[in-house]
Image (cartoon, rainbow, N blue to C red; front, side, top):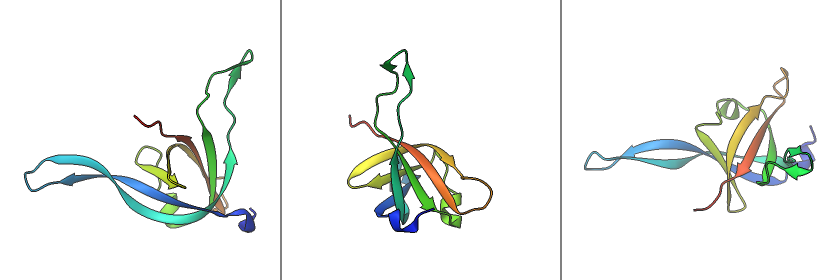
Length: 110
């Protein structure tokens, strides 16, 4: 792992349910933690020369920490440079607990 290549500041957000004064439950996002990461591109899969997965995908590689070890793909997302990325899967990168890789897709704005 190249620590010097970790030049991108990313923020993890956690999905949280809040209750207003009337008892209504709303789903929202709260900041969980921030760290530095290396950003790599993920290539879309191809089938007979046709791109099947044309969405923008990135891999964020971070140093291992107990906070990041708790991150699940269904409950967290990543924000960096004003863009929101949904986590597809978390790769623990072996058993040595040196780094974690988060494969993400750019969230489509509606």
